[in-house]
Length: 389
Image (cartoon, rainbow, N blue to C red; front, side, top):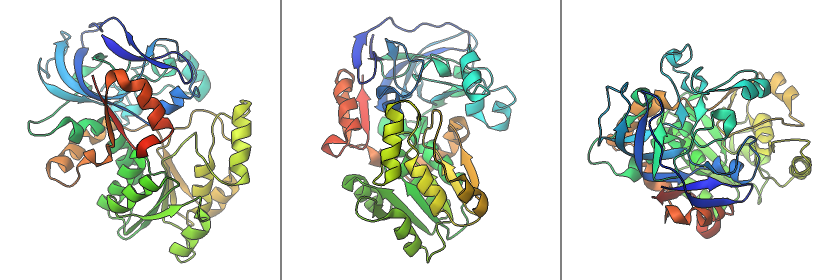
């Protein structure tokens, strides 16, 4: 089969690789009909996530048709159309039983290095390094899905791939980010980053009762989408100081909640952004937390900082004194996708949201290397790319 493979930083190729096979009774093989390039894939592309190996298959946002089932999968059938959560979860451990699916105890075969780095081992992730299980990803023609009896969501007739594909990751991620804010009716929510996750966080914040959403970015096309599709007020941080603008827009109090939908490769215009780039370049800091610093300082006293943006290691010069003095609450982590699949599918079916609004580009699987470059450098007003095997 053909698959998008990582061969080093900035080196992604479409290779011919062996077809996946059933390895365990709870496996399924999926023929992929749609897959996507995610913002967190760029952390791999840029070389910031360790333990990648040459030839690893990328991709964690994918869906398709079941073509083979292991003997232990009794609740799914051949030919069913399904979406696949990017987190891999067993469904029966301490954490899965508490809806903390991305913290599953049983889906990383060898978690010794991950435990050494992070203290504990979370769930396996498709196409996201050997820290998270070394699972082959879904930017391919076929994929093996472990724990298929737990992880596959069947899709009703009448819904297109484009409407449901993002249930795999970015729609639940944006929704959980907003839910983690404990939004009260009329709250003001500020969101750093108007990429796909940020766009869904905007929509989700309003769905959960926010009175005002303020979106912060530097790309005009993203800000336009946030304003027109998301009905957010917008700030271009290259034109105005985001912190000062937020004070003015909230009567000096600050947003009730702040969402960092950017993560470890944030950009900025201040001295801290220059510092971060220099420290990251010499590997004295693994992540660039410019957006997170701003969110902490901007958030009102007693507010919540929600972090769906991916962080991989060690941050520097964090205003933790401000967080302590203001009594902030932090909520973060990989998305518990399984928890949100059915509720968010119902929102799509009811017409509350059509997630396809974020798609700006569709490409063939063989065009993936070009797609990564287009997405990374925001060429051609690119916000979200869907690949068709």
